[in-house]
Length: 269
Image 1 (tube, rainbow, N blue to C red):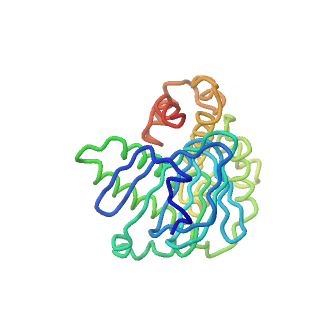
Image 2 (cartoon, rainbow, N blue to C red):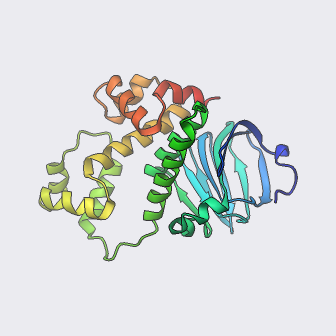
């Protein structure tokens, strides 16, 4: 239960109810706090704009645009919001529905944090569909929910063997130089393996290709820039490593469900 009425701390902006899911957009005032509280239902919270800190069992989790927190029912937590207005999108799940998908229950034992990646992208697409509200939206939302929970569950599966150091180095290289014109041969030469071996090992351990991983890093970064800066869409596209704004806009729409302009307007309220 909340310590007081939720309205004391949070302003609901938009709400979409399905048979098993409640989708809520919320706005929090700059510098505000929500004292320790719990939710009656399992929930998923996506930060759209601003910065927040969620405190769970003494652990401070910083969430920025695109960050997702998945938490079980009755997980006690508090929230602190930064200097800018904080906008978020929360999904509350009916436990009976979740009970029909028992392979996802481990996700809700406590809490999980996904700062970026496919979980974040799928949460953004669900947020987009919650605004469409046509007769097809419920089916699309449920499909996206299952896909998102599938990706999140995969993160809990430990690799059967320790990752080779060179593979970790390759991933770190992608994170450090995601906006450069990298190619597979250059990455392979840098870490000292054959390009074919790199490609196969990367796909095996990270469940995606090197190119797809690199593109996702660029789009995740662009998502934050659209929310946090006033840089033009063309400037962000160029800085992220896309060869033109049109190509960037097409891929961003596939990634999030929004065009870059729609997302910027949406995240800024």
